[in-house]
Amino acid sequence: MKKYGFVILLVFFCRSAFAGCKFSANTTNFIFTPVNIQPISLTNNTNEPQLVATYSTNGSPALITQGNDDYHAEMSVWTTSSIKPLTTKTSTGAVLFPINLDGLYATSSGYAFAFKISSGSRSAYITDISNMPQPLFADLEQSECDNKTWDITLELWHVNSYLRDEKKFSAITPLSDAYFRLKFVGDYDDSDAFISLSSFSIPVTPVTCNLSVNSPVIDFGELSFNNVNAWPAKTVTLISNNCSQVGLAEMHILANGNPTKNNYALLNKLTGDDAAEGISLKFFRIPNPTADDGPIPIETDDSPDYASISNCDDTTFGSDGFISSCTHTIYARFGTSFNSTQKNGKFEASATFSVTYY
Figure 1 (cartoon, rainbow, N blue to C red):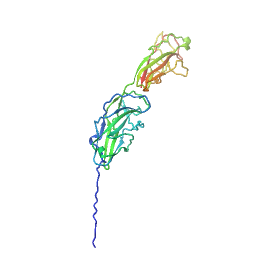
Figure 2 (cartoon, rainbow, N blue to C red):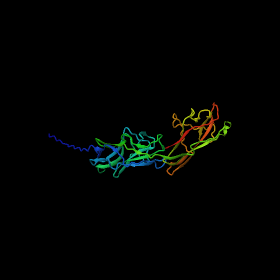
Figure 3 (cartoon, rainbow, N blue to C red):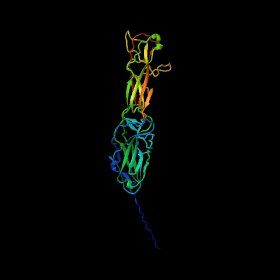
C-alpha cells in the first residue's frame, strides 16, 4: 500500500513596525518657540471666553512625520504626568492648559493656553485629553504622513470672570514641563512627540488711570465741645479718569501715624499745651452715619489691605466694558473719645488715600 502525502506551504507577510507614520527622530522632543510676541490686553471686559492672541512657529522648528507604507495611521494625543488641563474649555471646544503669572503657577487668573495641530487639509484643536490616547486624526494616508510638516498653533485665551489676580502681574509665561504628547500607535512599536514650550514671556499691558483729589487738605475750622452734634462732615473725593484696561478700582486709607488701637480712627499728632485732647478723626462712606454705620478701617503696617473699598460711587464704562472713570467719595468726621478728658486746642492728623487698579 502506498502512502500519499501533501506538503503545505505557509507564507506570512509582516507589516512595518510603525502604523504607517512616525515622527522624525529630531522632533520627538519638540519645543515650541512663538515669534512676534507683542504685549497683550483684553478686547472686552466680559465673562464670555475671548481669544487674546495667537502664536505660531512659522515652521521653525518643524514637527515632521515620515510614512513608510500604505497602512492608514491615527494620530492621538495624550496627557503628560505633570501638567493637567483646566476644567473650562474655549468656545471652540479646545481644552485649556495652565500658565505662569510672574513665575507663579496660576489656574484661576482667567488666562490659559489652547493648542491646534494642522497639516495640509487636516486641522484640529485638542478638545479632549487624558492618560489614555484620544484620537486627533484618523485614517492618515501615507501621502499625509511622508515628509510632512505639522504646524502647532498656540492660542492665549481669557475664559472666565476672574478679571484680576490678587497679585498684579506683568507677564505670562509657560510652565517648564511638556504640555502634551502626540502619538502614533503601531502594531509593534510606538512613535511619540513630547510638546513643550520654550521660556518665552508675553508682556501684559498695564492698567492705567489718572488719579486726582478734590483737596489735599481738610480744614474743619473751629469746633466747640459745647455743640458736638453740629460738627460737620468734610468730603474727600478721589477721581480716577482716562482709565485703560481697568476692571476694578480699590481705594485704601493708610495711616501716617497715630491710629487708634482698633484702626478705626486717627488720633492727634500734636502734643503739648496747645494740643486738643479727647477727639479723633474717622472716615465714613456716608455723610451722616448712624450707630449702625461703622467707620472705614484704616490700614497700617500691621494690617495691609485691611480697608480696601472696591465699589466706586460713580462709574463710567467704555464701549469695551472696562472702567473709563470713577469716583470714591469719603466723609471725614470728628468724634469724641470715650473715657477721655476733652480739652480745647489744635488737632492735626495725616492719612494717605490711594487707589489700586486691576
